[in-house]
Amino acid sequence: MKANNENQVALIVKFLKGHCENHEIGNLSEWLRSNPENLRLFDEISDIWNASSGNGFDSPEALNRVKGRIYNYPPAKSQNHRKRDIYAFLRVAAIIVLVMASGVIAYVVASKTKGTRSDTITEISVPMGSKSKILLPDGSKVTLNSGSIVRYDNQFNLQEREVTIEGEAYFDVIHDKHKPFIVRTTDITIKVLGTVFNVKAYPSEGSVETTLISGSLIVQKKSDNNSTEETVLLPNQRATYIRKQGTIFLNDTDHESMKKVKIDNIEHIKGKLLLTKKVETDIFTSWKDNRLVFRNEAFQNLVVRLERWYGVEIFVSDDDLNKYHFNGIIENETIQDVMQFINYTIPIDYTIKQNKITIKKKK
Image (cartoon, rainbow, N blue to C red; front, side, top):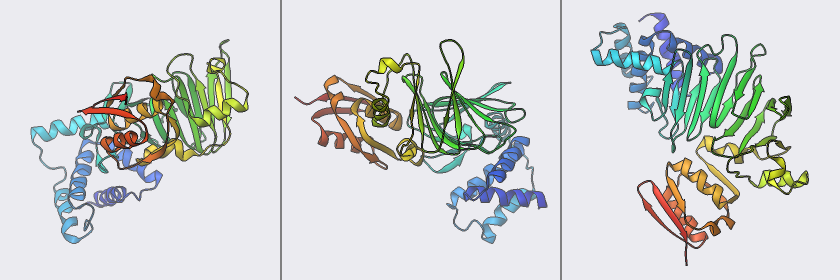
């Protein structure tokens, strides 16, 4: 076995164990991008790892299985294998996707996550009911929530680092003082050097929310006179941009901020940023750890979050239900469990048919 291949096997195993440092993840990402055969090797090692659930992988027997494949590396390939390698190489584009629901490493082509790549743009999208972790070419990590899309230029990290987001994403950005990391939504631009933050910018919603966990960042927006307004966020702060159109689901934190600045009508702050100087960030980021946290959550907002979380459609026939609010945590519960809990809490009748749920107030 060549020493270089042995080193790569060790790095892949370290990655599968979740022990890689950021620079090692970046090196692995570059190595995967450099040659379709590298993707094949990664795939083979992952297969053995997953088959043994990581148990005994370092034993002589398991390691010899890998060595046996690498002695013949690159192996002769069938036409199907060749097609799979080419397809995987074009789709992956130096991105490793970890499907959170299963905990199994997969490429974009092997998961529900959909990846496409043109000559200039790479796009990764996540369907409703799923979440995915993405590794960018610079080593920065992005966790995408249900129904979200991230796009970036294929020259990413050569001259600049810039992504566009629709939906919700949790960013853990590698520090690079020479290349600021820029996140663009349809309404605001976020600039950082190296930091951890959450952005929620679903197209159908009337607000864009930025929650800062660590580091610092700048939120920019265009004003009516086309000038740029900037707001600096510090850790545990949150900025909510109120769009001029779209359904607005403000939570208690945002409502309290409105009261502090003596705003009692949402119409008065459309097109403006609402700054909250102290928040419990876990409320807004727990989704990435497979937990939904509700704090005095309005029923209407609860419905939207459940639709994304479980990949279902929920139809509510009585607007009077919107007066109810909920507290709680969803972790391992099924949608049936959640609906039963709601039924215990407020007077409703509901039906579940495949992925469609109908809710009405009990008479």
